[in-house]
Length: 302
Image 1 (cartoon, helix red, strand yellow):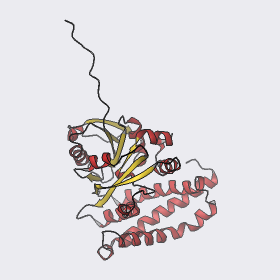
Image 2 (cartoon, rainbow, N blue to C red; image 1 turned 90 degrees about the horizontal axis):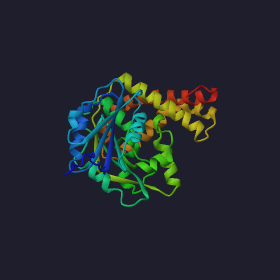
Image 3 (cartoon, rainbow, N blue to C red; image 1 turned 30 degrees about the vertical axis):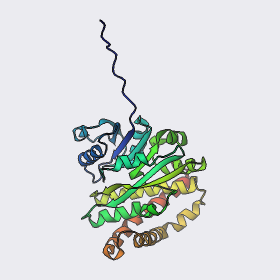
């Protein structure tokens, strides 16, 4: 009797989770453990996209299939892009080491894809208890736009830090995932094709990062640079306009964030000390916007 020595066929995972670790105030081991707990009972592939210099404690997530992708970048959108390309699941969920996902997170994201027309799903973002002023400032700056998403069945945008996508749709909409900052373009392209984005309010992820001031300012400056280039190249802004409005950007953004806080579950009077911290960080963003517009104007390489 001849034994079958062929290797077992590995089934396609129901879900791939791409966990980006940029080394900025996040506990990768704890984030891995939370994701593994959330994925119990599911066929899941976990891809850790990290800086090349960072070690990955895979033992923290032994319950799932873990692989890692080393990237020469500390930008989370770039890490997600490389993780998305390495994914094998039909649905790909994104998170970072700065968040702790809830126990029902993975299942809630999966069940939010009722039809093929739903191309992406966003979960709810929340601040962890006892967060510092800088942590709260970073949270409001990055995510206040999405705090009211529970009232919108088909949001126009979702935060990549707690989102899931049909991988095939993303690959169809973008051919440059490895360069990062692909989410807005992907959302716009898929909406134009008749796809929709959905909201999964029970898929909660808590912001727990303890970032350093220097990293926050550099991060916002770099992201602002990319947005300044995007405004001129993709949205067709006159270059002079982007440069002229840059000094007003921190104050306009701060006012928008204040209005969002007032409509959210977070009381404004409890966050007054966060406002000057946010203003300083937003100034770094505005400086980046001006630099991005200038780079396009002068033909400087991106």
